[in-house]
Length: 380
Ligand code: G3I
Image 1 (cartoon, rainbow, N blue to C red):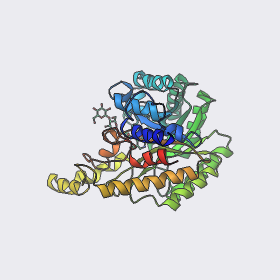
Image 2: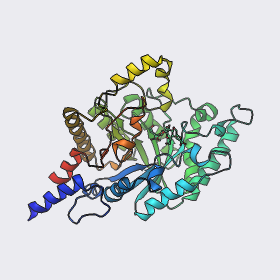
Image 3: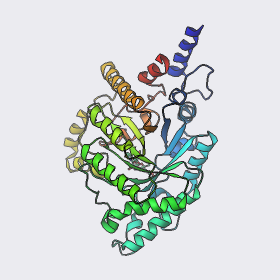
Image 4: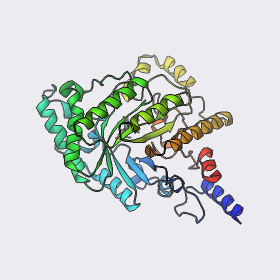
């Protein structure tokens, strides 16, 4: 009887993941990892608007945390000074509340998707440090204040450090220097003293970046500022990161006393293009002629018609190892959030080269759970 139930569970997890009701014996991803970490998904506006019912069913069944993929970013939520656009963010928060989920806000201070007005005056010149502080404080207190008590934690500062460990020369840094980071944490804490506050970045497995973040977080804490989590975005690939470097970051970040969070997990199945996760880095191919560009893109987009079996096996094996690493450090990792739900909606189809067909998420384009997770749910 037991065996029959498990077989049923396997089948349901594989083919029935898009059903809205939870079949009695199905192990869900969130239940499976309930003693390890939260299981999150980044949610686009289309999803909360009811335009993707299958993704909705998957998220409702398998995830217990959500983060806003875009709708809480600066340019979306305060596109013009003093003009806040709440519709999408309100719906996103309600979506999470209706499903009793841990809701994460993303992101308060980030150089990308920053409304153009935010750092310049009416003549287009950089604002003074005083004006930028005022704008940051107003933005953070208005956004965090609106959702006070409803959002569990905020990505307060996103992508502030370069891969070599130096400060990113963002407008925030150019105008306020390193102080923009403690100021952002101070303003966020004032706006909701109970909210958890996180710092978040990509390529966190790189040694110099790791060292810089450990130092930065320790400095913030020494100043008495609240920092609850270090977010390792984890946009990873088949050939990076090396596991020992990735693991060292998990361990060292936990050593600051913060929770470690895997905040934006996806793993590209495509050949790696050697650029960073910063959308501003796309310019290289724009210098090419249309013919050069077409030829160049083709070699990086080899699986348009579907993922070959051997690549799928390799992807699932590697993801299996990634999950093993997270489980090994479950005492340090409080949340594992996928940057989307099914492959077709991933930003990786458009970055770093537009128009590719990638396979980076937990569910495939038919909303079927990837084999490594089916195995995880059924074998343990
Ligand atoms: O909203 C406009 C829409 O009006 C317009 O019609 C359309 C045409 O292209 O663009 C829409 O904006 C897009 C936006 O996503 C919303 O879909 C932007 O072009 C597009 O660049 C933007 O991409 C987002 C990217 O951040 C921007 O930096 C991705 O969806 C989002 O997944 C990605 O997420 C970031 C994290 O926030 C931080 N870490 C890296 C991660 C991946 O870049």
